[in-house]
Length: 342
Length: 276
Image: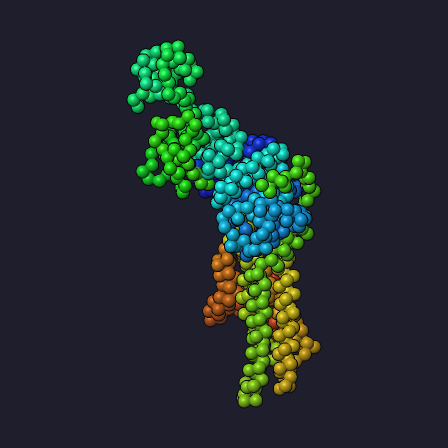
């Protein structure tokens, strides 16, 4: 269990993290989300005792990290994949770290097997690809068979097979009762991996909630209806708390009625429906909804957030619709894969 | 995948491993010997020192018969071949700096300090591993250089032995001086955290300060300052003829060691206090 209480970090007059309180519980993968420069990495560095908090404290299992009697065996961390001296072989790198807490050499070979680096174990890590470096970093995090794992952007640079691997690995580790705290800039990735989310923006806590709740909170509750009898249905649906709008011929956006109710009304009046879809926000939309004002760096010309289209995109901007929610929100012109780098 | 197969149903947890000073030392020793660059720095230092010892001895030997009597008297069969120490200190100083900055520039330091959160044991272990390796290698090299040179000088009957006054202290002191140069490098590396900056600071202190100090010789300040400059003081231990009446060999060396200790204390304070 990781517990932060009033965690604050200032660099000069710039506040990187302000009054952050949260708990990361064992037995689940907890995602750590936030836009560029929101203080995710700073927070992780404070958890690991690398940066001293200006105020507040953060503990792991009740201890501040530097006071843990056997930190490398309690906590495994991947802060950035490049925290490796490139002149050393992968195996030697792990041996140095293993030796610190008396972890035997056979455990080094074991974790090299787990991350699939046995074949390049004797090669100097200088020549490693980003994905291989990432695997080496994950190997060092697993070395002490720790109860708590803290991983900063572990899927960075991994190929699709590697992403699937890490997703399963994290879930397995959590299911064994470990505390798994993962930051990622891929929202869709978090939706598939994490059960719980801690979202920060400009160093402040924005949300501490389950993934399901996070999405439902951002959902508008509207229902999209496509029918050849739009005008007739519109009259039938009208009521005191119901608003019906239509931007496309033959399509209605209904607010204030559930899809069950709309379907029933249509059936009773023998109206044909082509489509009946409650709108559920994607994690990206939910995220943008919540962090819209908290984005620190934004490319010029981008609209202020509030909808998914103003996503801070660095790199992989997928074609429109690639991450559309199942409900198919056609009123969203583009749904981009949001990348928010720490 | 493999990960799934590897994860046992009831994982065997081993939570006994404490980070002890002895373990940190072993870890630093693995770090040291698994880097090619550390080996090459040592090889470069040793090679340069032996090459210069041979070069000076052989040149002296062949030119000695043609020298004037006054020039002949200036030949010092112990100190002249020892000039390789000035190249040796470059190699060993860089090695000392890289012990620490190599970790800062690659980011390895975060992995090291996260795994050893008390931090100071890492600095002590680095200093110890460096001291043992540098002192052993440099002392052996100093004696090898000495005996090579004397075997060459013996053909012109100028050779000295370790039992001659001050000779053993000078040859032994060469290894000590070089070790402390490197330790100063380790400390400056930890303070400055960048390779270029720490190397510039180290050689600024060792090589540039004495040159600037000579300006003071024009004033009455020179005698009060120059003998106390780090390298001036430290090199007294290798001097056969006293170059400064104010600084004897051992006090000079101890003063030099004192500078390194102060720098190391500053490094320890900053390592503990600063964000990694």
